[in-house]
Length: 259
Ligand SMILES: NC(=O)c1ccc[n+]([C@@H]2O[C@H](COP(=O)([O-])OP(=O)(O)OC[C@H]3O[C@@H](n4cnc5c(N)ncnc54)[C@H](O)[C@@H]3O)[C@@H](O)[C@H]2O)c1
Image 1 (cartoon, rainbow, N blue to C red):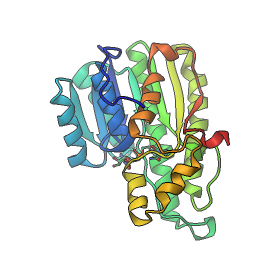
Image 2 (cartoon, rainbow, N blue to C red):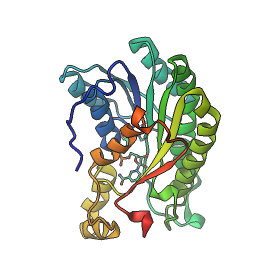
Image 3 (spheres, helix red, strand yellow):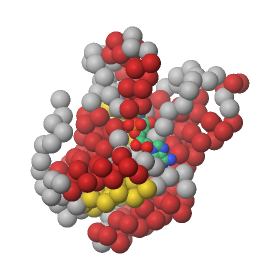
Image 4 (tube, rainbow, N blue to C red):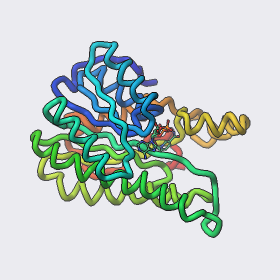
């Protein structure tokens, strides 16, 4: 299993931007980027939790700054991405990860505002992030963007139409952007996590404890992921070691969609 604190200097001199950085997979990715030498800009809606992660990273001697951001708000995203160049002088890597889950509803019963907010945050949010990140990364001479999709970007789940549609959209958006900027030195890819032990999942399991075992059985590997195992894949896609990977939707799911 991934070691959350394994340190290298692989990202020394580079600047990383992470959305949804206050918890779960985004927090794990922010910690890993910092542990491997990057200066990190953390963006999230949750100020207190986001500031706490940035402070924790700074206490290790690394550099990190938190920016309160709603990724569905274009002006807020522009300000957050500009923080990378204003504070640290450049932008090299971005992990667009912010996301939310909503109550299950079949299409005919899905409230319009639930549909719109889900698409706004998880699909338009990724578009707004890339729109601002791409010029900054080009200015730095190239780099990498990883968008967080899901197994729900590859297959359907009843009751989750907005989530499923947004994640399918993230994969398509990623492919188009990869074709547009791959030859200019930006590696753009998406990852498709299976179930990971984050706030999103812990909330559901707290309400329905028997779901824990059900979730484990759904993954051929026999367990759910730790957030660091998903973050590791996102970081790998930002390294030179992934230099020929472009426009892919990388499953990191313990075999879930291989079944
Ligand atoms: N946990 C899983 O099992 C799982 C599986 C597949 C995909 N994912 C995806 O992984 C990503 C991270 O999820 P997680 O499991 O770490 O959940 P999480 O709830 O722990 O973290 C999500 C973070 O996104 C932030 N956020 C929500 N809306 C935002 C907005 N509008 N602007 C900025 N930040 C916002 C939240 O405040 C939170 O800190 C999401 O895109 C999610 O869809 C998670």
